Image 1: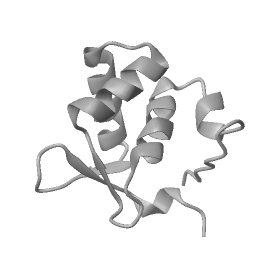
Image 2 (image 1 turned 90 degrees about the vertical axis):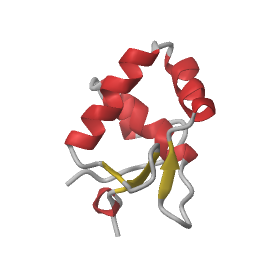
Image 3 (image 1 turned 180 degrees about the horizontal axis):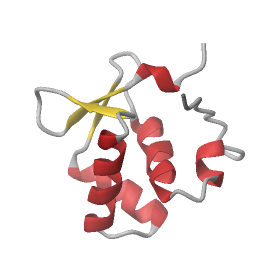
Amino acid sequence: MITVYLDTKESVLLKSKDKTFHVLYYILNQTDMERNTWYADKENKERIMNKLGIAPPTLAKHIQSLKERRLILTTETRGKYMLNMNIFST
């Protein structure tokens, strides 16, 4: 189980050598926590790519990795994802 820590300066996700967790950090910051959803729209993707200095194909690979690890889950709506709530400590 992965426990997420969202402190903006000391995030465990940003300290990870696995760059996919860096993407997850920015996804979590863009997530609508009331609805537990993240929209992979052009604006949100652009922000992540700019923050991390990565290209669209690289971001797509990281998002795919997050889906394969079941950290984000696809929904019926294209470009809309739900967070796997097991990543949060209770």
